[in-house]
Each structure stands twice: as structure tokens, then as C-alpha cells.
Length: 180
Picture (cartoon, rainbow, N blue to C red):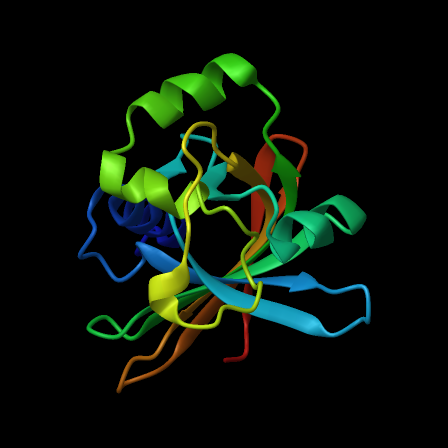
């Protein structure tokens, strides 16, 4: 029998390493102060052996405000060639390890660093895209870590769809098959 959990881990780790992998970009949902779900696309930057996932953002973004107010997030990954969907629920946190933040920042290319050096916060109105201004020094770079506690694996197979729910209890994951 196929090891679904190993497949999940492998696909997520590939998504973090390979820019062209379908899991490199995923949708994250947070809950806004108005209780509306806020969804946006982010890039998967790292997946540890225990499945902690990491992405980068501007610390002034609304998602940071939402995570600080309510750290529960939902992630959605989809691989169209494999017809594989992962829905992951977890607890997000803003990384405060200044050494890790600095080390990560130093590994980012100059062009990509500009995403975290805008003079005004993400979501601020602009007169025109060409009027975007950048800081002369400093940045608003932030790392967000997500500790998953529930994963739903859905494989859309022409013969039969397969849905499996994994739930984390302490350091172990339990498995339960679900009706797709």
C-alpha cells in the first residue's frame, strides 16, 4: 500500500526547493479582524523533517497582523499533473530569531530583497505602479513558520478518489481514511 504521508513530505520538500514544482506557490488563509477569510498566494521556502513550513513576507502586511491576532491558518496546495490536493491546518508564528532572520536575508538575491524594502506597506494605494519607492537602507523582511496539526490528502484518480486525514498528536501522526 502506498505511503501517503511520505508522499506528502516529499512533495512539500520538493515544492520548497524547486521553483517550478506546483507546491512552490500555495494559498494561505488567515482570518481578518472582520471575520472574513483572507486568502493569498505565498512561496514555500522551507519544509523541515517534522513538516514545519516557512514562507517570507513584509512584516507590515495584513497577514502578519492576522497571524498575531489568530495564529490558526489553512494552506492549500494543488498539483494539477498528479491531481493531488493537500489541505493543511496549522499554527503560524512570526519568527523572532534575529540570527536566523539575518542569515536568511543575506541569502536572498538583491532583486528579491526589493519586495521587503518598499517605502509604503503592502496594500497601500499607489498613483501608478511606476511610483513605487524603496528604502535607501533597512527592510521589513519577516519569516513566518507554520506548524501543521492536520493534513488532508486528496488524490483524484479516475479509478477511485482517495482521501486521507492525518492528525498530529504530540510528535506522532495518526491516519484516517475519509470518503472523498
